[in-house]
Image 1 (cartoon, rainbow, N blue to C red):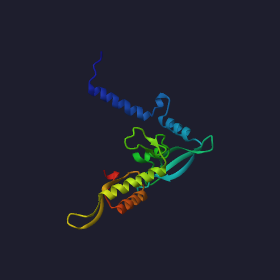
Image 2 (cartoon, rainbow, N blue to C red):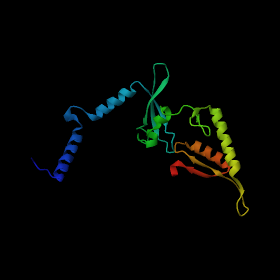
Image 3 (cartoon, rainbow, N blue to C red):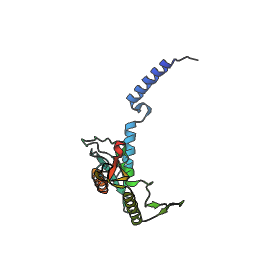
Image 4 (cartoon, rainbow, N blue to C red):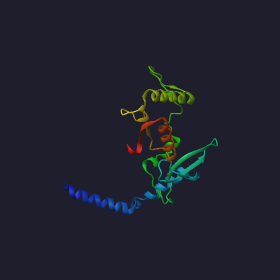
Length: 197
């Protein structure tokens, strides 16, 4: 049996990898780049391409959204990818932008609010009206219970110390501004943003 050192093995492997990539698979009878292109064309063939902007942050990366009408006439979103013609992102997307298809059509999304009453074991489906009313009641109760008008030195502070708010990194700039205004209006001082955590 021929004895091969670790260094010899690595040298042969490196030369093989460089040679294989230089050939691009053509020596084996196929072209990897063409195979990828055909796969993409089959998925979005006949689809309408719409230009859009990523909703996640203020960078403004350009997106291409591929849509097609399905059998019952509804428009179906097939794929979202970076726009290679964009001077901002040149076709690349960050992990959040790359997952923007899930933002639009995730099959794991809960379709309606769920509520578990105190002491209950099961979640039950409830209406949005019930959910918003319950949320408003809980916020008011927490604010009333923990609102501080003056500090220990007698200074007027008018702040709510029983509620904290963390903005999501998926917020648009407008949503973040709006949420901050609401929280400041309630006197909330513990504000944070997911992007900073």
